[in-house]
Structures are given as C-alpha cells and as structure tokens.
Length: 284
Image (cartoon, rainbow, N blue to C red; front, side, top):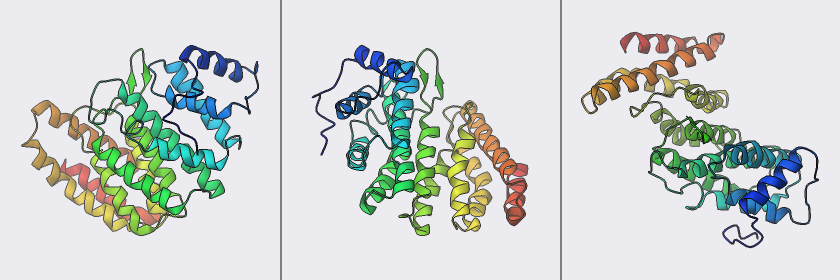
C-alpha cells in the first residue's frame, strides 16, 4: 500500500516541473523505478497555482500514464482512496475565492480518470466505487467555489470536473439504476446557483452525466418533475436572495435549459421532455 500522505520520495516543485517538461517533450522516458515517487509528487503539487504544472503537466501526464497502462491497478486503488480524503477532495471545503479550489477540482478529475480506467479494466472493489459515489455527492453539495477560469492561475472549473467524475461513475457497471436519483439531485442543485453566472460551459458539463443516466435507464419522469418544479423553486428563492443574485440564478437556469433542449432536439423518444423544457422556459 502506498502512503500518499508521507512526503517520502516527494520531489521539490521545480524538480517535478523540469522532469515532467522533459518527459512531455520526449527528452526523458518515464522513470519506472521511481514511478511511485513521481505519482506522489504529482499529487502533492496538484493544487499548485502554476497552471502549466497543474494542468498541462501533472494532469495531462497522469491521464496518459493511466490510459497507457503504466500505473498498476493497486496503485490506482490506493490513489483513489487518498483522493477521497480531507487532504485532497475536501481540502478547504466551504471556502470561496481561495487557492484550495485547485486541489479539490483537480482531485475530482483525477478521480474521473481512475473511474474511466476501472470502466475499461474492472479492478476497483464495489465498495470503493460506492464510497466514491458518497464522497462525490458530499463534495458537490459542499463546493462553494464555482469559478471557471481564474486569471493568472488558470482553470479551477470545480463543477465541470466533478460532473466528469459523476459521468464516469454512472457508466460504471457496479452502479445500479436505483443509485441515479442520489446523483441527480445534487447535480440539479448546482444548476440552481445564485452566487455567480456560469460562463465556462458548466451547463453542458452538468448535462453529460444527466444524459448518461437517461441512456442507462433513469425514468425521464424524474427529470420532468424537476422541470415542472423549477419555476416555483425560482419564485421561492427570489424572496431569499438579493435582486442581482436572482438574475444570476435565472440566467443559469435558462442557459442550462436551452443547452438541454439542443442536446435532445433530435431524439424523438424524448419529445415529452423537450415539451417540458419549452414549458419551463416559457414560465421563467
């Protein structure tokens, strides 16, 4: 078992960046003998405010190593458990506008990659998949920092990244249809936000796992009920927030509904859902 909380074998940030740059450029091969130390170093600095290191080097390298079968299953199992910890997915949870969002957001997309690999190779124990589901739900319910692109520091995109993780979770064969409702509610709630307006495609990313649930048997009536209740829910919230925040809320809902409509526009089996979206938009 790999102790990811230990700093043993962890490189300095500048050393890691130099190594990953050279690896990406083909100047160095992957150090198989020290690959545990490299992965530990990558996770140690995954929340760095250096966007090149965080996004283009650490995440990109981890993605390709996982897809190319260069990280053994046992290592990914240990890594997933570490990702779900307070030090990673929940680091600084509840904060808004601080740098801890980068650790949370990029941890969730690492989780997405591990789940993607499990969907190919089926190596995660069932209880690990369900633990992941519970922690992702807790995380999305608790995430307050909804920033997409952050000037100078690059992408945070917490909601888009966790939506990606939910999509891979839904595609997992160990999940059952009855579990989808546990996920649908928290995803839907992150549409109904009034603190800011989504401007970096969050609506389309939230749609991906919702559409995946429909593909895998979620009763379309569950979504139609949410649509029917949306106008009344906005009216209720209008009494609770400042006027500007209400317009943020309405803008987020309308953008999501329009994206939803476009995504299902060619699917005849979802004509009733399209009609419900039309009706919902006309009432907002």
